[in-house]
Length: 323
Image (cartoon, rainbow, N blue to C red; front, top):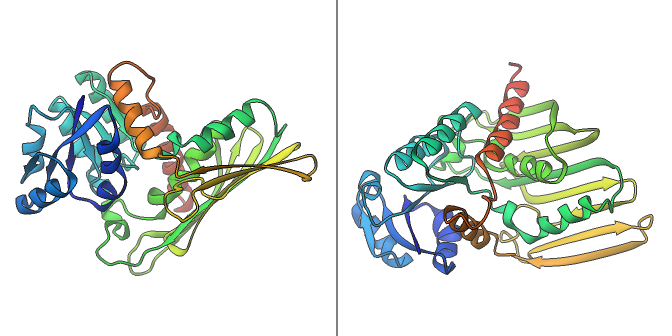
């Protein structure tokens, strides 16, 4: 059984990932680290971890930890991923795992050199609703694809939130815009950026709204994301023979109803709906990484996947800023 350690007591950890680690039959939560030892001890007790450390370095030095989960602010992801790899640990790192594609190249080289796994925590890749969507597309149920649309928005004007600090990797594109990008890539392949518009918050200096258009080999896509709009998520794919609509494509746990996928065919006269609930995609993600480490499964989100997604992010930011 693999033993996980977590760097920091971040909310996303105790809300989503740590419960998945505790639920998995393939791993256990072994250790928690915080800059504040008392806080780490309290958090470890609440999460059921037997070990607590007052520094990240101490956790990395612990021989009783096999895998490190990193939910730190974005600008720290690469630094601590590289340190964890050097300490002989596998890594599950929150998205986005880096600020640039070049940084992911550094991680990939280090992972290869140390013989360890690194996976970006894109949980949507492990939700069963996407398995059905990809199977519908593979079967040609929609015919030629003409258009994809999607968005992910929420409201956040908290001064202390790192997502509102550009020097910490904040902003809407890196936080939630990455989801429609990876969703489009999972469904339609690799895109070409057509154009992008970015609106900055005058106080925080982060991108609070980003609208961008991609071309997936002839299928056009319009996606947008934001951090100061009504909370919403949606994804659709429109083809000559039908269309797919998804009410909770990115995080079905972030709402009361879970995921539903509607397939419209026969000129819109027929609708087949499937309900997936929450889908336990965080648990599926953790299980997949454990199986990949054990050589029992392919890694669901490879470093090549992460790099391809980050390339699109880099291009959007450069295009929107006129670089």
